[in-house]
Amino acid sequence: MNLESPTVTVNKSPENVFNFLSDVKNFEKLMPENISKFEVLDNDKFLFALKGMPEIILKKKELVAPNKIVLGAAGGKIDFSLTGIISELESEKSDVQLIFDGEFNAMMAMMIKGPISKFIETLANNIPTSI
Image 1: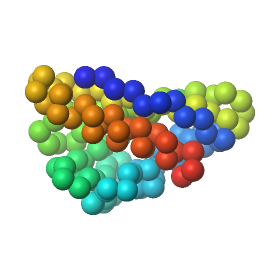
Image 2: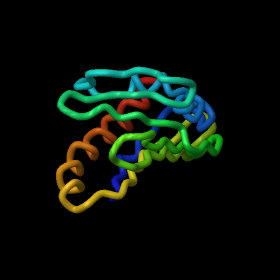
Image 3: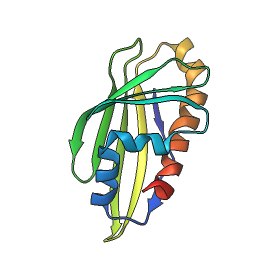
Image 4: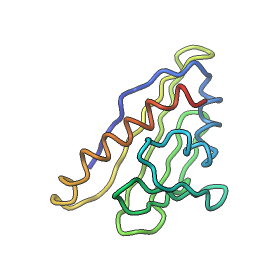
């Protein structure tokens, strides 16, 4: 399953956006209002839970400064990645898009597609106001 957030424009350079997203504690600022738990586990890993959903641990898997950040599931029952793609528009303006990619059976994919689409859209939409 591959889901993409809308592309958002940020009035910051790709380096600023990359540095913000590289610091896992900043993801707390991007989370939706229905977050029930957020905890930084170490420099490259954090745990979060949304109301009514299981806890998820995300870990930095790949960093390609200043254009790409890949977070992946660390443990748990589902394997997926969340990739941030950062593109320079001007020296102090960037586009950011989040891409969710995971392997799920058809039943699971049907159940989680809506909530995950809304989740990555919220994360993306919160980037411009959080940096």
